[in-house]
Length: 459
Image 1 (cartoon, rainbow, N blue to C red):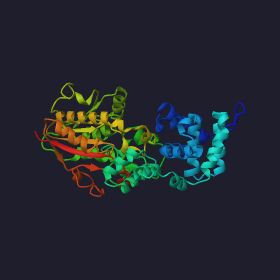
Image 2: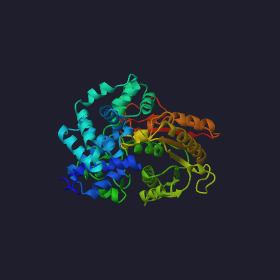
Image 3: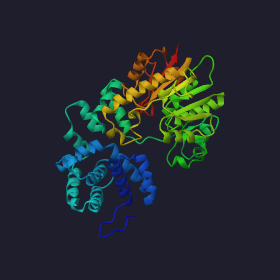
Image 4: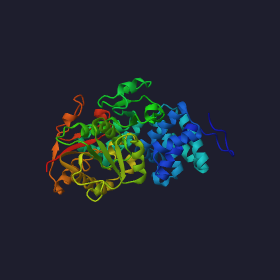
């Protein structure tokens, strides 16, 4: 039901207003949609179908921002920078409804104009004219009209990703054609995966207890939800399960299950926040008489790790993972298995973070890759001879994957050998490549684009 008019302003549709507030917060305050939208929905009392519509409108608009901006700018005959930010966000929402949703043109235009009138009254006529021009042509025709000559730039417009990300995907996959499949997968809302913590709950039993849920395709611990709030699930509330992409489960499990000669009691998660992989490792360690040291440099994230691993043999420390040998809890050669889930651009999880593709820049890479290599070299110092290091990033960008591994090994005086990771992944997992590293993809595996390199210290 529309909210009643206030002070002579038009009644506003609550779902569209919630979507506007979320999109505006993302662009104005650098907020994250997955955090801000639920708060807005709760505070405004938007539930059920209206909440689902607001969610689709918010996430879809944020994913498609670059392409929507090109279309709106053409319809407005002016650059987006010359349009007031509130009007700009409202026009994006209106254009998304016209070009992507089964919303009648009259309803999409009228509700957006009402929204603009409530925000910037003098811009209502402008918004009406722009949206009517947008509505004159469907999305395919707009893309054909605006298509750049360069194939990468054309793919960027068509699939709503910055051109530098399109190039990175094409480089990693070997062709622009397959990169476009990966870009398409980024634009689909992903399912929510749970990790059923081994020894605490069985994945099949957990799936059977949840309406519409199913076990995952590859991870023995994965449960795929059909919808709903995972925080409301009893197994999540009491620590028997946690939310975690199936790809993240797979790469953590490789570290825990790859064979190891000798002692196997002390494990290390060098970049543990917010605690998903530490939770899985902790549950596996519990069954095997091992324990995990979980390191997190940010105090608030270290607190999240401690909370996420409560009751498991996980010791959380608030420290810098590069301080191996300088921190008494991080002795040189003190660990049998080490996970480096390195900070990265997050290009492998763009389907879950709709605003991230437009926030990240190529200039983010140099400081991140330097940090990745320093952390990996620290892991080389932390692991004992014969022990294993798993280097993981949620990014397929080659500068953050194979190049970071090669450069860290080259600059270290510790001998490390790459181990073929493929035998420790499910044989049903398709297209694992030629090894020894593994790159997962949404369009191939239905997971985030996780990269895994497994290394053994030889001396």
